[in-house]
Length: 127
Image (cartoon, rainbow, N blue to C red; front, side):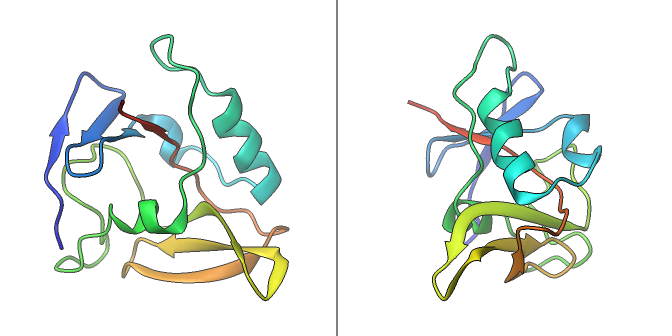
């Protein structure tokens, strides 16, 4: 299912279907972070005086995948983003030292140990 997105004033986008506001600035392409660093990064992020950012769940992150596209498999609404792996906050049920991520080359999801460094796109509730 492809979700309609409405681009707001950068640096973020609003997903009208789920009322989520996604970080959409050059920082989502800047550097890879360990899982704990990614959680802290989103928790401490401030954009346009908004401070309630968080790392998305795997289900939330998967709503940004466009399965009709490849490399990148992300929705076209985002100005920034790489064909790379992005962390979610969702822990792997079998091993809490792992968390789920989405690979935006193909849109596939998988889990990695927290000691791996992946990219980050934060989210906040649209209210």
